[in-house]
Length: 344
Ligand code: ATP
Ligand code: LTN
Image (cartoon, rainbow, N blue to C red):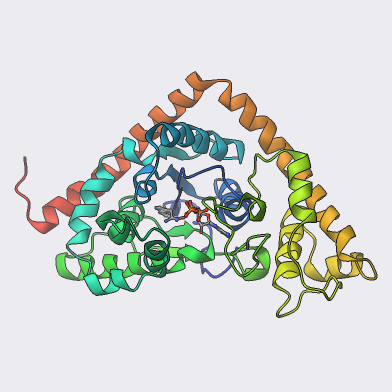
């Protein structure tokens, strides 16, 4: 990952803090995995990491309650299957820690209507869910700011689409610190470069972001898709008519497939070009599908094991909530004092 000045803390100094979250709106896609989640595991070795399944955020779009409950546990297990270790990190479910909603209220009062109106995710989702433009959808970034700021987070590893939300978090933190005295650490986004997959596109419309809630399942590969389904989706991926495996402007479909192949094989884009020189798109699409199937196999196996041991998952998320609350409680107390709430 690039675009940060972050360096590991020298001995004796506090470890830098990482926070990130993912919504339980469906099985993680290759976009979630390549753009965000695959980077989170390795970060545990150097940093104090806190990862959350952000169920409060997910209800900004209407969810079926029974499905949400199921997907929340699945998302928690998926995080662990993707390498998040409850012995190394804090892994919790957002609604289990009430400090997030409490802090969010205070931060709402340091956030301007105008800046929330400019958020592209709000504009996109308001257009997509025109019959439910609720206040939660509008103030979504404030809750996200609370998530981040409550833990005195230094770095926020996310996909490119979340850059604007980390920026507004910084604006809110700066404004609060300016008005009440330094309370929050100023966080920085940690986003990989475009060629590394910061924004993976739909396989059916490579100008559109791949997303869990895409109504067309052919465009989106979920990390639990069966091998046969994965291969089929890659074989029918939309590409141009040029038929040369070359990374170039305007070749959105092929560029996207090359980034996916690079993420799963560790090969550079140049090496991929060489490997497929003189071969057609058909061979390349099959190779991408196979690399993805192979890369996802251990995650799928681990996920199955975890879902067979619900008691273990429950122990982990309960412990995660306790650990999270201990940390966030300190910041919330400070916030309440700073704004002038009379101590209970
Ligand atoms: P939804 O479809 O419900 O809006 P989503 O698939 O966009 O969800 P989120 O839970 O909002 O996923 O995002 C989790 C993480 O995955 C974020 O860090 C986000 O930036 C990243 N991410 C999501 N989609 C992509 C993508 N297509 N390419 C790269 N990163 C992505
Ligand atoms: N909005 C994010 C999910 C999210 C998040 C966070 C990410 C909620 N709170 C805090 C990083 C830090 C998204 O991916 N849509």
